Length: 107
Length: 116
Image (cartoon, rainbow over all chains, first blue to last red; front, side, top):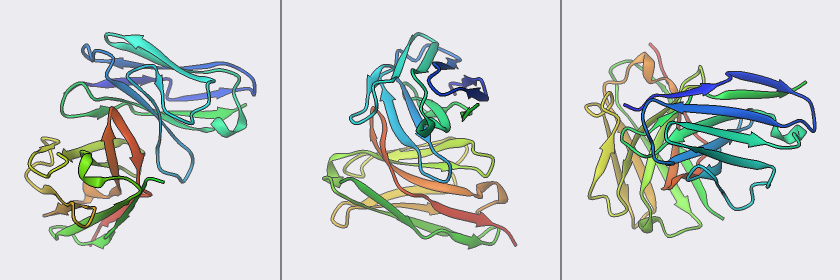
């Protein structure tokens, strides 16, 4: 199985700041990486696919990058509505696997 | 609007069976692979498996393959998850998802608690 190591586990930042969340795959996943946002008490929402393609309707302050085994999600100009837990997920190889999540809070 | 609505969750005793359903609307169900994902009380996400658009092929997490079975009825736009011999570690919220590159739509989840 491909292990997805996500960091940090939690993050506190101020409104307007830029934050980065990292995801490290245990082997090359050839950019087959998605990111999800899960707000408290809600289902996950699809943010990004193919490492850096933004899902329709997702604000442009969200962006993804990476290659090989290292990937990241960047949120520019943090807004209060960005408070959530963020998960990465690889779909290059079965079984599909998720990162452990990053809980983002406002300082 | 794409909608996925799960049902069938609840409290179940260890060793029992349970069948979850997911009714899809707002898109042509038979065009898409579908999957099940569960989230434990500790918030860990675990992929359960996926099923081809015509139901002819399935993939499962190896640890669940012998107890969980996915199926679908395209005429009813419904996805199913049959769970057998459930254990306490199966306690989770179960999500139905639409598969694209990633999972672009999620249901609201069905809560399953395994306890005597």
